Image 1 (cartoon, each protein chain N blue to C red):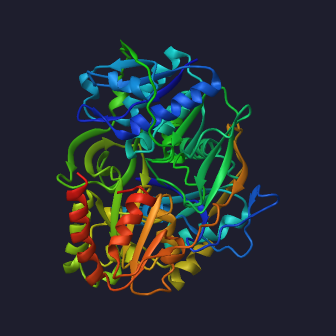
Image 2: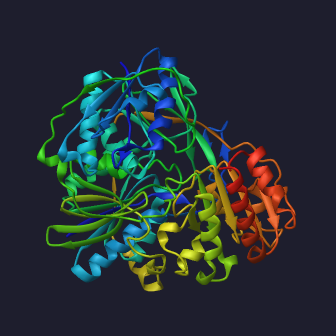
Image 3: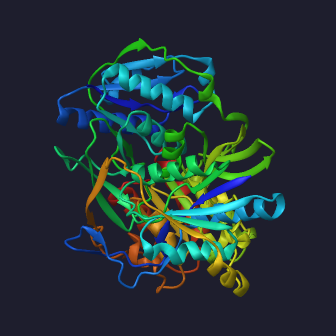
Length: 248
Length: 322
């Protein structure tokens, strides 16, 4: 089984979010980048398929040279090889179009992409890849087993879960549950050393229309200070929630 | 030309998000000088939609669509959009609608903006405001395609009634076998409990509650308020509560009317996930807990004393006001 894991290079969850250049660009100063958490859950499951079922795992990212450390980290965790599509990830469709091209040419059976990234939170890419390729697609996937060509999987739904069956080739939107937090791997020294010699192929992007563009960023208005209510005066809290906030 | 919305339903009834989406669509339609068409699947009485600004309903009745299949539903929405000559398709942000939105956008060659909050900033060029960076910022996105797909963030607009009636007509889209590549074997829904996705109020507990055996505090308060229960990441990592209750940046997002945090310090990742909630209340014994910086109302004190008292007082309040 050939697996492709799509990796977003995103600011660490503790990053301060600021903008620059007249609020038109994300300010990368002092920001640490990580593998997008939803992608990391997917990658860890892919490595499980590699170890248990002999799958070959490729990781791919659409981005500039500055994203390569994130791909190397994925290689250190255990991916066999990496691809970087050398382009600025302008919008969801542009990225999906690049990934669809990689998938077509690479003949992957299973494509895993985080259901959303922590930066733009668009939640578009896995579905758009499926739309472009016409493949089977399961979003919000929390469990995945593959037997030959047959797939059993679980999708999280509002207020519960759904068990499905389908066949490869398949694209999934990955999230927590696919593996647990404790299953995530920190690269060890051996992994880091071997990652240096693994193949990282750089591809030039294919043409894709620019459907949407981010024109500006804004930060939420500063919040007014919290109203403290005494623990001895809970009636006051109820009063505020009822008459002022009008939420009960 | 009409704006098309997919009015989501469950068990034969419209979801609340369908009315929010209709209210929003009505306003967008006014600014574009057009009308609102809603697509419904397997709903017999659609008259309710008229109250929220829908002018016309395309009713699909098809046994093949009895269970939700994203690809088939996306195909139906695409065909409806083409039939209506729609330029703007509006979808909500439930798990199912998020699932199908990207498929719809690709099928219609449409530019897609998800997590939209508020009315379009401008209609020419077409620009919308969206949540980004896990609610730590907004992003103004311009859509340049002829057909546009918008995903409206949950609980970001509100429900508004308007006088009107919707004309209904049957719509029979063509479905192919390849629409059903994913087969649903079983669905498990937690019954007798409000889900985080549907809840107006969420009561959430953190490590300050000391152990899973103390969750009765959270559950009792939630029950009185008709609220869903949730928890912080450490609590789900420790296995005190199921992952499905974990809210925050890597868990479920919460955009509810009232969020009550008990014994949650308010790590930046937690706040990111719940910040779209309208009113936030924190109960914590540490006055320095970061949650107090983002909360609207706060009580400094021992949750084990405060929460049971608050629950009793709310019970009395509810009895009086119902």
